[in-house]
Image 1 (cartoon, rainbow over the protein chains, first blue to last red):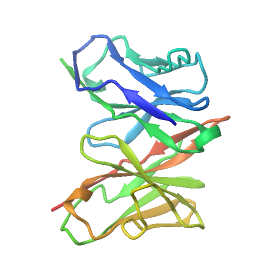
Image 2 (cartoon, each protein chain N blue to C red; image 1 turned 30 degrees about the horizontal axis):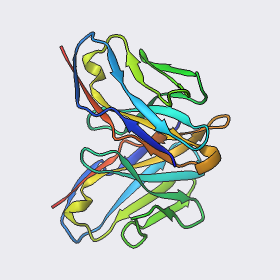
Image 3 (tube, helix red, strand yellow; image 1 turned 45 degrees about the vertical axis):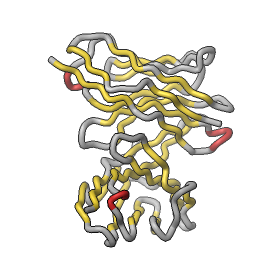
Image 4 (cartoon, chains in turn brown, cyan; image 1 turned 90 degrees about the vertical axis):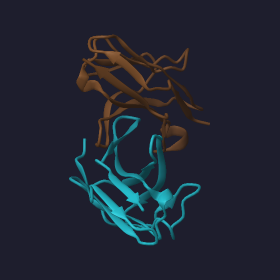
Length: 114
Length: 116
């Protein structure tokens, strides 16, 4: 079946530090992969996506590369800011096998301190 | 992308009562989804709502507890019935956007429900 495993948090970093949040997945087919971000008190926002192997999604300085050989989609940012403090969710969809069902990881809470 | 609004944004309710949450989308969409996010947890899909047909519920969720309406292509409601403190969660609606061969989902801001 399909599932997403995410690095457990919480993660606390100083401003301008390098960020990596690990995400690995299990899928029966060829899924699309996503990172969503949830800022305090808000709903989820799509941060970036990749729809096939070796694609790199990027947005707001965040990047993630779809690695089929390691079944991973790790989120990275070279220099975090206080405003990046949020909860980050890795997710996948596998339309060919499970239609519009989305599978979410457990979320990783990030706090960036000045 | 779609712009989604939810009402109410938060509420505090007494056990045994019911609350109806509204979800409005700024464009016509075929499928709408309702999720629950319990404190400190990830999202759990409650049901999928198509316009003109009954909602499809995921394992562990039943229509009597979470009745859903989908009267048109831009609107849906979720009712949390006979509430207990265990129903305290954030309830999120989402809609599907599609590209070439993939789906993505857009979420509303959520309704934060506290049951006392």
